[in-house]
Image 1 (tube, rainbow over the protein chains, first blue to last red):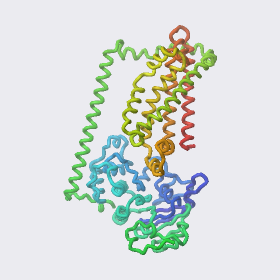
Image 2: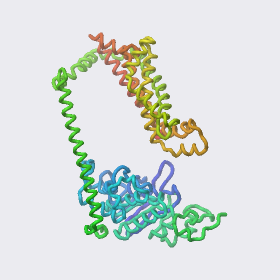
Image 3: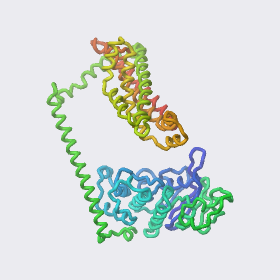
Image 4: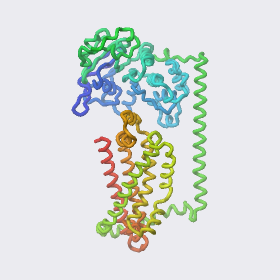
Length: 267
Length: 291
């Protein structure tokens, strides 16, 4: 279904993503982990075509993505929704309008200029919001919502696009543990109930283990781990992050369950 | 694949309520938008018709003659095109004087504007209670036309570039102060709070916390103001402040066969504005860190 071959993105002399090859045969939930600057975000941004690859190919259901231009590119971006760490909503517009932005690719510029959307779309947007449990906030401005609620609006906008692939770039990095869990549960539901592929950049290993069917580890632009969550042992994690034996994921875990584990004494 | 999961749940009364509330809100917004649009168009049309009826000549009769004067200037200048380079050299010294007036007044005005803007921005002000005082000071300097100040100062100090410089600097401090203050409002408070936490005083916080954030925007506003001031100092030449404006006035008013000088001065002014526009975008990009 998704095939990434020898994908490279160079920023000056540095390869942010270096010769990455990944193949995914069916829709699944994939977690991408790695230290800051490992190239996770750049990889996702190239999939959505917010960045253009320096070399290499991305093929989705037989369609080559990296070479698409203008209208074809925007058409692909409709099929490939993106969720951001900082939500990237339009703060002064109401929640439903933000969700309706998911249909912009199908609407004429003139209609969207006057904020005219078909009633069916408006109803669908409210249904999606209801499914994510925030329909009560439909008429509020996006900026009036809490971080967790805003991220769910962003997920609703993504679902509104009716995409094949949902990309999430550190969707829970600015959220508290409770809201992080709600957002991850929602992403998992989008995969389970709608059968969409979800690729999420994650900072916390326990989140990757709990929610993902497959985990990809990146270090300095290269894929250094690609396997099932069970294979993601502490030793593997140390390799991915380039850490030594003092590294313990429970030390900074944001999972509420981590409290129940024995917190290791600091040296 | 979505219909199953997103199946509309019409039976749910709560959901219907949300839908209806949102539809009502959208209708209200669209209605207001439509009314504003209609009122705007009506006001524009009626205002234009009223103004036109009070015009001595009438817009529609006069509009056709609009190109006669520029045409005369252009045809005369074209006839003496060979003289233009020589005239441009001749007027170059007075152009330098005009640019000097503009540069000095922009510099002085911008420095005043920095102080005024920092003192009148909510959240940054040294004396929050005095914000209205500093705002009114800026309002006054914007309200008085620079030509009035220049005329008064020329009466007191005699003609020359200094009265023009003071007049333009006075206006610039108010105009830039307002723009700077709006830039300051968008500055992040985090670095300022950080500096406050280490015990920095107000001036230190402003110098090290605010100015690095806002300097690129300040610079681009100041350079825009510099362009405006070049034109303003050229106009002040008409009332005896020297510079290229004085030459322009002579070329215009003694008429009859001197339109080639007018054309040469306009070309000089145009080239100056283009030059400083290019220069300012170059330095601004450098400051922001773009290539």
